[in-house]
Amino acid sequence: MCTATWCTSGTSIRTTRTCGCRRQLWNERGSGPRGSPPGRSRRLGRTARLIAYFARRSAYMALILILSSIAIFYSLRFAPGDPTGTSLNPLTIASVRQHIRHELGLDRPVYRQYFDYVGNVFQGDLGHSLVTGASIGELLKTHGKNSLILGFTALALSYLIAVPLGVLAAVKRNSWLDQLSMGGAVLGMGIPNFWLALLLVWLFSLQLGWLPSAGCCSVSQLILPAVVLAAEGTAVTMRMVRASMLEQLNQEFVRTLRAKGLPEWQIVGRHVLRNALIPVISLTGLRLGWIVGYTLIVETIFQWPGVGFLLVDSVLRRDYPVAQFFALLLVFFVVSANWLAEIGYGLANPRIRRA
Image (cartoon, rainbow, N blue to C red; front, side, top):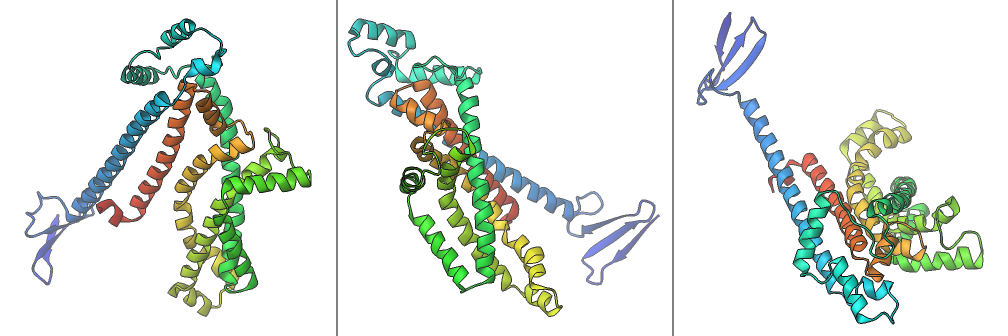
């Protein structure tokens, strides 16, 4: 059984199928029952735009990784020295050096070395260290675990400090707590990481003797590098939380909740904070990229045996397979973090998908 009724404007027909309890609205200009409902067309259009945006950002990511791998490979090959100069005795005769270079494939054209390396990686062969002979897969397990421990400790420490202080600074705006928190944030953003690391080592290790200055992997050895790695991110997150909280506190719904008599702690904790943390969560992808970049400095200063420390050491020793793999790994993490952030922005804001 089917009933059809005209809208008052006379521009569309609403057809109701009572047997199946389904309703469909067709535009008169569209065509009729054989056409697709406008709602479905809009959904398909949004899905297509989302897929196109996802594919476009993924293509950019792949292009950046390819160009980065070429730049890393060529910069290592064109740098002065090679593995034979760092691993052999300086008195080794030239013929022996040349033979070793031939065995390692270093006498072939650089572009052939690059394509051979890429082919081996796609086959699952990451290679071995030219200096120690250790498998890169084993190095990734040991050093990667240490970097993950340090990175996630710094990220958690940053949020545990920044979010409460940012909320209190916004709620107690223009108070001494607000001024002290924002002053500390400006200081944290202004001090370079390497200078802060040296200052903390001088104070807590050399002067007070409370914490070790280097090593791995006890809790006491983790404190100083984690604090240094979290310092700038804590300052940035604190300022963002405060600004987002102030924006939400000035919204109309907050005045409505206050007029209804809700306690201030309930308004802030259940309603304002939830909305204020959305941009902070979106920043997490970028924060991961920053942490990956700063591990090079922090791990080297504190002799923390992570990926950053191994990368610096392999570059100095001209250990090509180790250096190029871990350099590209860090680039991959940074690019992936930015890619995830852009995808998140696109899902949250349709205007970005259309750009």
